[in-house]
Length: 168
Image 1 (cartoon, one colour):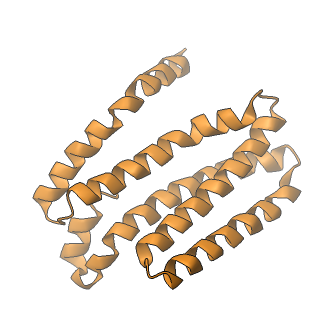
Image 2: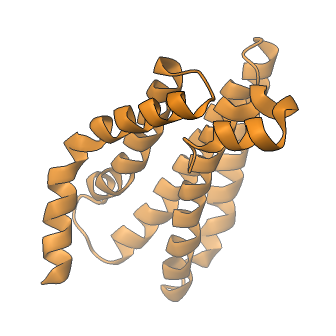
Image 3: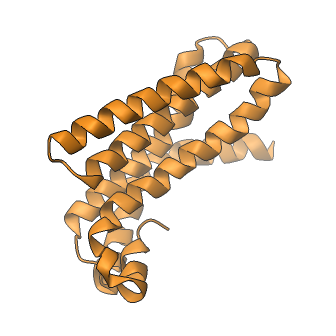
């Protein structure tokens, strides 16, 4: 979805074209927040919801500090999007760690890292694609999507392994 954002914005609201690159990162930050929402259900079920506001406040403080620093340094909306992604990722990591530790999983931090690595990888891939193919036309988008698929190939063995595990 984030890769087709360029042509969609170009067609519907061309005055917003400068916001396409940061918009791609904001969309992926939303995926991290989806993980937070799902993980929060587990925290509530385990009776650990009292920790969630502290985690949210910590992550919000990080976003605010990084966003202000980015804007003050002249880095613009792209850096704010990166700060937002970092915030959502931190929040997701904290809540997931809470659940994983509550479940008794050993090496909780490693497990959380394994869960979040594909999101970080995909976000980095989208950023690389945006750099390699900055055009927002359909040709650039198609080329970018092809590169994105190539960049995802290191994740395929783990996905296949997980798919087999889920199928039983």
